[in-house]
Length: 180
Image (cartoon, one colour):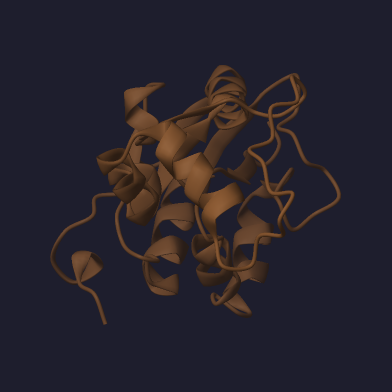
């Protein structure tokens, strides 16, 4: 049996969790020795293998219909699904928009902003993703491992990925749940 396959993707958020993943520095080589790093936002492959992966990692909240599709695809193709970071685990900062009506949010973002030109209008092309209430990943699909943090520390991400690559479910407690 070959190395476990790992894929990741980002949803509605800032991409800070993937930046924290890169902050593992040379330890990413250690992860690559343990696992076959497949599709990620920072590689050429953008979707998890159709044949499936061992571990799927999602960062960001579910903010629109495309995020929801990505979450379902990752869940369907992953044996173990990881919610990485506060946006994926709790909804994070993007969920602050849930306190407002979606039409108000769109109008403010596209029509009323100080930088909007006089022709500003809310886009309504059917090709665009449909905005939704922001949800944590577990509200849309089953999550097996939740890794909080904004972003999670590189040491925590390294621990989680190395445990999963070695066939163990990571236990996050004590110093693995602190913020710097």
